[in-house]
Amino acid sequence: MHTMKKQVGWVLASLVLVAGAAEYKDGVYAGKAGGYSGPVRVAVTVKDGRIADVEVTSSQDRRGRKALKEMPRRMVVANSADVDAISGATVLSDAIKTAVKSALKEAAQ
Image (tube, rainbow, N blue to C red; front, side, top):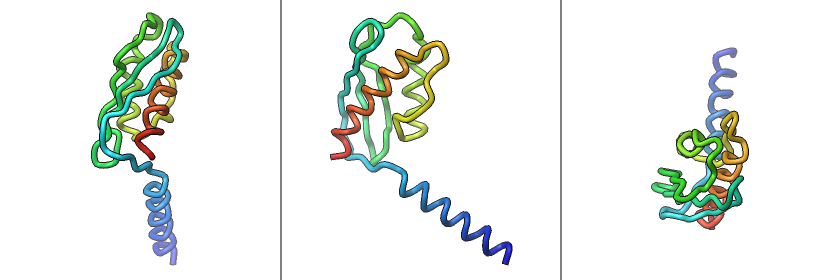
């Protein structure tokens, strides 16, 4: 009985993960949000319904430059814009997240 409960638990956990995964239309989508020193622009590539690439195409922010590489990497791994901000780069991290969410709205339609 204990083993069956474990199996049911794993099945339910798997269903929750699959149900929570967003499905997007393939393509490249642009997003924009306000950053610390001006607009942050991104290009989000969706392939096979998942986030395949996130590129920050424009940012004038000089603070928290680590976020420019780390935030896109995290978003691809998570297949979501809802990832933790980079410590010391909260404003730029939030701008990137907002821009990616904007792009993904178009991909979800």
